[in-house]
Length: 485
Image (tube, rainbow, N blue to C red; front, top):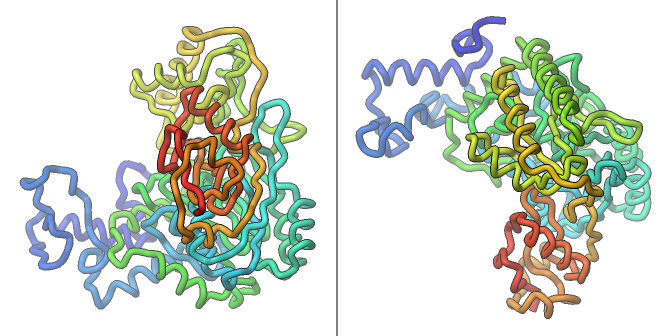
């Protein structure tokens, strides 16, 4: 593999990266005096180095009137890399890509089959599109308390009960790396004449090495959402929406996709983010077997070392779970240590984690890591567990995975309805007007249009009492809730 510290080795196959390199080189030589945005004009004497590398797409990577051809070239290469006919690069993260895919599905009022372990962006996309969610739940693994795959039978039953459904939406791999039978889900969706859209935000590397499973499009899905910035070496907010459209035997209208993407995208996309997505795509195509294979080896080695700590384990394939081999998920219940205490120790050591609750830690190990960084992480985890070790305990699944939703009205109706703020206990039996979720993982326990139940309220209070964060609620203390008036 060519020296990864020199981005120029990717430039011949990454037109957006090449344009960014040429612009920044010219700017460094004093050859650029822009009379276009951004307003910092690349001067670091005003607000400092925070603006370094910020190059716009328009009048940056290319002249305004020539930008379309440059972007189209980069996106065509992304489509080819994932083996489909349509691709767009987003600077709004998987949030934007999810919402664009949902706007492309159906008319307002139609049902859509959705995995309940969705990200909030999917639910808000359903609000924007005016669709009616039909929830399906993954099975909860008894040994770990974590969600497994979305059962094909559950999707088939939901589609049979709602023959006017416009699509199926699942997140896979899940936030904790567990995987569904995407081939089976695609067959179920296609038998009903609707597309399968997969949010694979956390696993953009799938399909680029024999050490990991194929990506969802290779397994029959019609569209794939993925975050380049989560698992690949890209700028924050970098994401892709990729689809097999009716031009290529798929079920999604390319014109509708295009309109949906543009409707929710910024008209001032950051060229540096796009260039980093282009570079990451080129890296996967050129060196994917090596860089993704090395990532799998790093994660596998960390899992082995963590299993040597008494009571600690790491999530792997089992008789009941299929797990992304490049995802590290640490299970703490057997150690008696509380995940929040372990997280505080790692924060003090300069190692912030992606997620921590009582029983589960998710440190993001990526191709940006190496043996040294992962070794220091494992050492710090083992030391923190020893400091906080207690009596082994039974696993209790997060309410994000288990609380059953009771829908009263569709999310869009509730979102736009008049609302009032009431004491939380008085909200029981009322229709929720807001989205409330433990974060991470950001999976709603209550969503607009759902009945506030005692179970949901008690589960959220238990998360907060245990030191967890309650996200998106107007009152994160849960003393009050917003309900439809």
